[in-house]
Length: 366
Image (cartoon, rainbow, N blue to C red):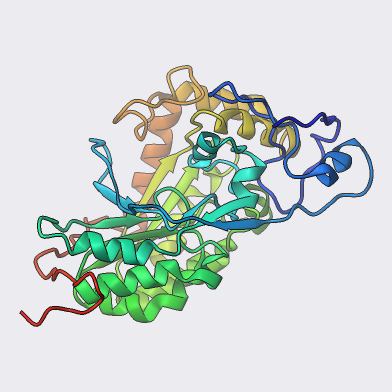
């Protein structure tokens, strides 16, 4: 699919969206998309008033729902993604390249062309009912946000949590949305059985900056408030300062740790910016639009901690940048945690209480 559109407006911020275009190199030799959507988007790029990009949701029905991995540098071996694509529109999202597999743009398509999996809870029930299934924590939110806006309509994440509670199956949740508070009743019960940890990402404390980076995610204040309410309810919570973007968000590192501690959070972590595949040119374009004065500096630091590359895909080192700047961020975080009294003790979830469900939805009496 190819649209002949001018990119003359690339330096004009696209309001409400993280990606500024879809004009990024494709890994699979597909025709490049200069503009997403239909002819009206093409006309906008040429001239005329801005046209609001529409979000569409397509229901899909996969045959499996658990994704297993053997990565040696992450703490889970299975995950569930109820949705593909994410309306939060975080420009730095490392999941964006997955849209390229479907001939869709990792740019604007990723945040406007979404997919929901309404049969996910039933598929999970069938998987957990298998005689040889061995329970280990299921990670949710590792690719796209399980509490993005369309969760209000579909409630797929809530249904999965209900099943986890029913079967006493451990689960972890990562989100940027205070919508997680809607399910605080389920999360509280799961916490009573040591079956859940909730992680909320806080990138900055500046709502204007967050509006540029993560245009449809909850504001920083709402995320911190959600952490406080979850912690007060006895739910294990983790504050993830991610990503740390040099010369853009790193100034908030110490303040986020301090605020999290005030909210009752006892566990924090930080993740440096990652720019895999098409994310790198999308982020460079974002810098040119929003921070042209420091774009070169930002990318210079990024490359310095990634061994001269935009991204380091290698196991272990991808989460542990190297160099002077990386050491500086690491030491700043360590000192901030010490000052705030955050010990970062590891959460341990329970697996021995798991009880296999019946595939028809009824629990066995034996």
